[in-house]
Image 1 (spheres, rainbow, N blue to C red):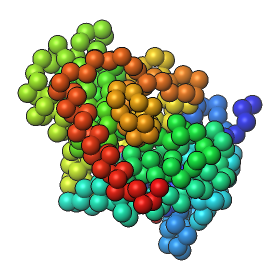
Image 2: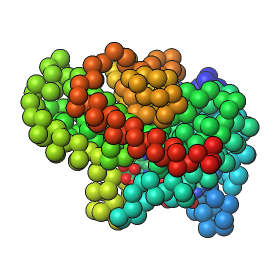
Image 3: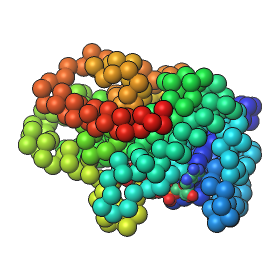
Image 4: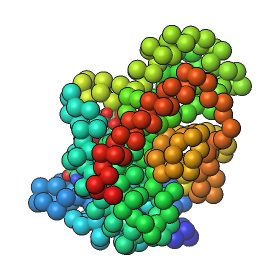
Length: 328
Ligand code: NAD
Ligand code: LMR
């Protein structure tokens, strides 16, 4: 094993997503089977969560993962993020039945201001940040704004769960394999307003739109199913999605770090003005990744239905931004 270990900070490490995430990072599923990792785990400093975190660390030890070369428990982001190469910001309050993600803004906004500041002060200058904690786009925006010395483009929000959900729904509708779906994307906010767009998608070179050929299904079944899937899972489980969220976080970071071989994926990233989205809005875009960098797929035609969907999710994001202006 010759690669230098990298430092991976994970917040909310004793939570339910943490429990589904850490073992997969330590086994090499996120950064590759040849990449040693040091886990820097953050939990709230209270005795209960710290004790639970110790328990998770005992289990990580008991797995004897060859790639796990170090592990630390922290109660303060200023130590947890020290020299971090990757930071997965999961820790925050999840929503319960009947709550909208936006209601979490007030509760969770303060956490992401403090964590953005800490990343700014102590993380690697190239740290790749993924915000999972909801409302993920606006929390990522808050953290990015609190970290003026880091590259804004290195702050990202998780839209990958929506992307994967959309892929599964399309596979079920067409009867084709999910692995064969290419050129799918999800625009906008990780919320029911997100716009999952299969107009450009192909399966073995064939157009998914032509295969489905049902705009009524798109507008009235597909989009609401993907958009409200988080709420449906909360309703069914009594808890928000955890294993699928952890899986999406692994997919997002793996693709960003190791590349997508030309395949489109969706990442929430600060806009540089692409597709008319104002600068800095943390928005889901189709991207490809190569050499540790993402690149937006540009030049796609936006028809009237898509523009209306994009405008709606953008409005929600700019409203959320206005709601946290006092934190910036
Ligand atoms: P959870 O309550 O099981 O775990 C959250 C953990 O974070 C807890 O252990 C808590 O002590 C810890 N925590 C809270 N504040 C913290 C802070 N300031 N620093 C460090 N740790 C802190 O929740 P969960 O199910 O793991 O979900 C975590 C978040 O992820 C929620 O906001 C949830 O809504 C969100 N989520 C996002 C997506 C997505 O697709 N973006 C998907 C699923 C869940
Ligand atoms: C999800 O989409 O499953 C998560 O964002 C959890 C939630 O609150 O919906």
